[in-house]
Length: 258
Image (cartoon, rainbow, N blue to C red):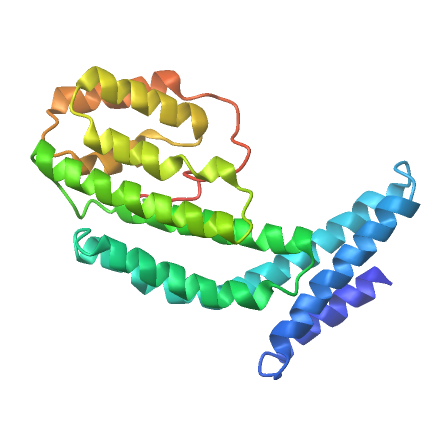
């Protein structure tokens, strides 16, 4: 039965994109999955071999819907995020406001999702917003030679991070693990003492153990006043301090460095 339902859903998803109620129907399917899961959890024995398979299928349907629902938002956000590097972080507050405004319009469409599903999709959005910001920081488009310039950029990033966190939290995101990523990166930019930078890098790696040398090296391009030996020393410190345990959720590992 569930297999037939999934097939019918896939058919609708692909062939009915112009349906006037396309998005509400997708959301209704997610809510159906949640109702079904709730029923299973209450009425199906843990030892039942088919339970895990059914729950997995429900998760597949939900994740597929989330992906479809978020495609348009993420496509709209891409060119806005590019403005950070194009403008070298001038007017960064205005850019962040545009990101928040664009995202807010889409989130309102998801309010009819049941709470667990709503929180799940908002957390996916939260993760994407943070990730896309980090992507811009790793583009090697900004290189600042003075401490004052780096201080100004760090302040801009900190302000953007605070606005982003406040927005996501106010819309129900419980992904608190994301909240320290941008402030920690801002602090690395702000700091000038080599020892202090290393400590902050170690802290960052402890919280986000999927960060790798390639990410940090691209990021440190911003700090143009670091000598080669200092850069090598910092990168070596990351290798020594990066935990081998996988993160609870990927952040840096999903970012490709060009």
